[in-house]
Amino acid sequence: MKGVVISSGKIASKSFYDEYIKDADFIICCDGGANVAYKYGFVPNLIIGDFDSVDRIVLEYFKINDIQIMEFPCEKDKTDTQIAIEYLAENGFDEVVMLSCTGQRLDHVLANISLLYYLLEHDIKGAIVDENNIIMMTRNKIKIHGKKGHLLSLLPYTQTVRGICTKGLYYSLEDGVMEFGNPYGVSNVIIEDEAIVEVKDGVLLVILSSD
Image 1: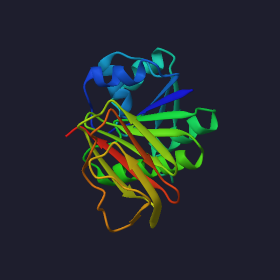
Image 2 (image 1 turned 180 degrees about the vertical axis):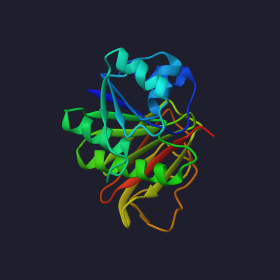
Image 3 (image 1 turned 60 degrees about the vertical axis):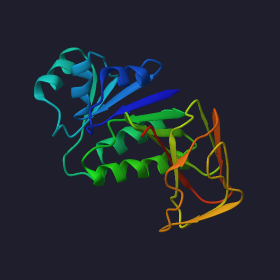
Image 4 (image 1 turned 90 degrees about the vertical axis):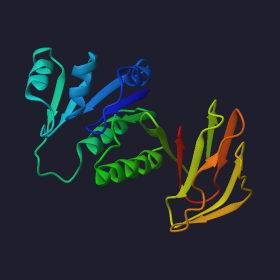
């Protein structure tokens, strides 16, 4: 099952959201993410948060329309997005796409990237997607189709990542090693219709960028 989480970060175009929610089994809006649903006219299955960034008119609209709402205190130990991710993990979802999870708040962006590690640890396929980037994480293999000419950056998320092998990239690696603090894997280029990144030991952050 595929779950989509819409947070309070950068708002994209309607067509962008349509692409990712059209085949979603469950949609969670985190706080201000409900503003996106209201603006573009789609209905979430669940709205969660402390509601410090959602418009009151929007929240009331979804309450009137019987959308499930879970409210949490402002003073809590988890972000709204983390609560959403854990909800999906606990309810048997095997794929999670995170939208509006990038933007001006770098602290939230980094926190959201760390949630990809949570998903990885729970054997759930995860990605953070915006209009320019797809951010993923792996400890084994990732295949990327149909993105020839796009940039692909590989960054170690654990102290050391070993046994990195790539195919379909301009700069290839065979049994490569990456260490935290030495980001030499930035801005590689996909040169084939299919690119493959494999890892033997450690966790690798994989960022696909369109520009």
